[in-house]
Length: 527
Image (cartoon, rainbow, N blue to C red; front, side, top):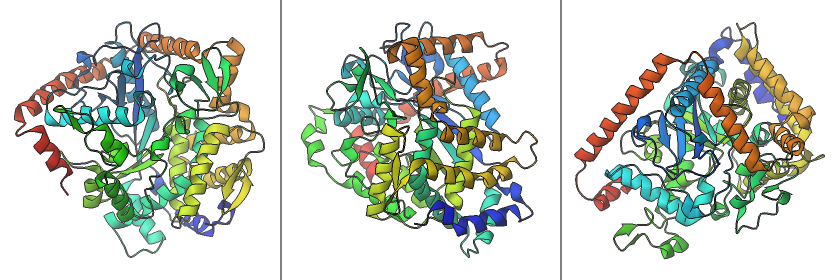
């Protein structure tokens, strides 16, 4: 792997795009968001109430569903080409939800607040249909395997696809005889490999979970320091959510899924889904007539594999994600590394999304050789190092088998993004992408500007425990959404109608079910 400063292939590709006569070909990528939030009481305790019926069916609603828990709301936007439209839709979703939450709040941070026991985290329910039961059993299995507390972590997922006209132009640029789905998938896997190489930068720039409530850590060997009586922290941490105490769960430490090609990715995931794992078998699958997990394999289904970024394709009804990828190739990527920001009412902002769009283009355009086992171990270590120690003075990371200063590497990446942001800004006098890049460059030069440093300063200045700050911000956000005027009444009415329609769709699915749940599962997992 060549270092960023010597990537002549990237420089040639960028120059060719600029000189192609159609540099705007990179503009107009489709962007979507999925944002998770725990519902809590005014006192900050996890609610035990069901998903509000006024929000529709969590099984069939396109835009308001649940993730692991009945108390973990997930808001899903459509895709847009304009970042401001995307965030406006997410804002409208928040307004609609808050109109139906009563006294409840949406927790403003990724890491949960005070939760006494795993049993206090209610598993999501999706009705009595076979597919609804499967979703609940899958979550029951996650709790059994990893504990429910890990599943109470929230995040923001950024979905992105390059504009369709870009692909033919890019094929010409790299002089590829391959076209269509095979070419697009191969190039998305170029991106995935480079995200593994450089995605630590996203944790440094946007991580905002350097501190947690001690209840989250109960019974774990975490190595964090006491901050207040109820809080623990990593002094130079950026994203404990993406560290080994969060999603980087030790249970999957030995699971390796290649992104060297679509075939290898599907092969490795399929192997994990079909390979029995004795410790999970010991937990039991169907006990006394009730399913504890979908199966006793390394992974129950594809989504159990935790990764910073995923290749995706919209699946047909009842189609497994790997089958959808095998059928028609990669359609978009899902970036899963973003913490929910307590400093943004919707959990994310335009600068962050514009930077990510440019960063994904960088990962696509850069030279991207296959990743061997040795390099993958170094890349995993880099992500973990930045998640737990990203703000440490003089921090070094592994690159090409050598220890290099993180800040110097970050500067190289930021510098490489300059031309991409100029292309994305073409025709817009406000130059929003260049502005977003400048904001991130400033964080590289001054660590105090990072969200994680800002979070620790806020806690230090106020003397609050993490729980109190998160609860205060949650209440502030609620007031912001309820006080916004004028509300988008047309959108709110549209969402209310969608909620009713989703309930009708769930009833139709339940009425149409045939056969037993056992037979349904057998069909789903059949190759």
